[in-house]
Image (cartoon, rainbow, N blue to C red):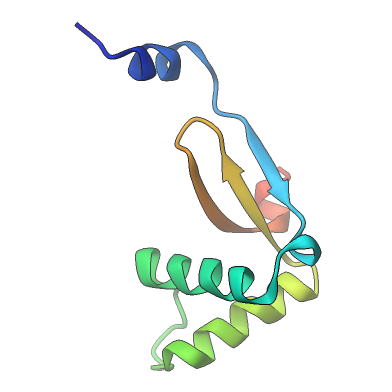
Amino acid sequence: HLSIRRQRQMCIRDRYMIIPWQELPTETLENIVESVILREGTDYGSHEFSLEQKKQHLLNKIHNGSAVIVWSELHESIDIKDKMEFLK
């Protein structure tokens, strides 16, 4: 017997919503960025960077529009995606 939530997940295709970073309080934006970095890590090649450096790098990408904050309705989660990859 499947839970109602699981049945709903099986019936709907994932829908995404771009969250406008400009409308988020600074602390919320920084917490999202840190959460994504700690959850998934980021690929910086052979260089080691501090958490603060990674946060600044990702914040710069968000501010210049090359990355977007995305809410997944199906997974009820937030992520940061490369804008060009996301819009494909």
